[in-house]
Length: 378
Image (cartoon, helix red, strand yellow):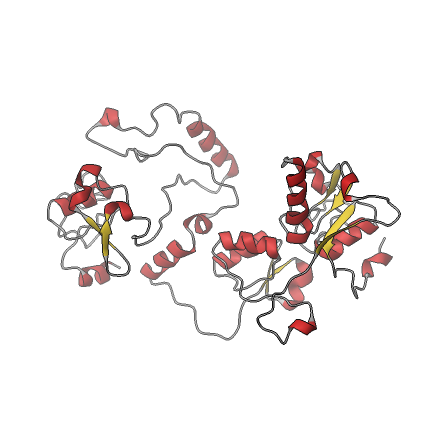
């Protein structure tokens, strides 16, 4: 990387141990405060002193009193005022982070220790002037704990990781007509070479470029979109619309109860419920959205006494009615959003209703031409 940069710029200062880009540096070119041009403030000082012609820093680096003397270089080869960084920037970079070994107990200890002192000038370097940004950046307001499931790749994001990989000269993906499809659960492995235990894991695989595509419902399309994924094609359920490429593929979300139950929408409260999965369109988002509109309460455990919504927290009442894989001991599949949970998906939610676990939210054509092989199971 150093050779490429040195060939592009006539001279640079990029402090780092062993760096070959030290011509413009004033100190020891180390990644420390021993180098005056180290860090964001140092990079800007390099530009301000006239040592360099461009500084690569973050949007908050240029002091307010000096913004009128500098401009940003935009991707479209134009320039813009410093305060226009939202529309003129090179990339959106992840915030600085605290890292540790992959140890849950250690992570808890670090979080509890730092969280307890956040209000005691943890982020201030005022007493150590002229040094700044000691341990944490002075502009930090609070530390925020990340979910345990968020690894380095998910935190940094696909765009940033792509940039880093290009700098490290990682081999480009070879051209191939094959794609890697990420399936959910063991039952889908006959169609796939790669599989995950749930949809969330599949999304992670796609973000890491370990998989290329997966099938999801509308609610999961929303979640995938938050992760930078886009819909490429849709399922069409009516042959009449297949000849019309501009037609909109859709289905009706319905609530099904046993004819003998006497239940209506207005009398559902305090009963049990069966859902295709947490966050899914027909099985969760639509009915729960309507219930929220009706009750103005996001705690749906107050509305339904219990139920099965695969993907919910295992301790939730919405896992209490789930069947799992059928194993009597150590069934880790219970309430999982995969085919290992017998009540997962459309057919699973209907099975939940048939086997008296609750009322059922599904698509209108779920029961059409289905072969209920599970009806003979014990």
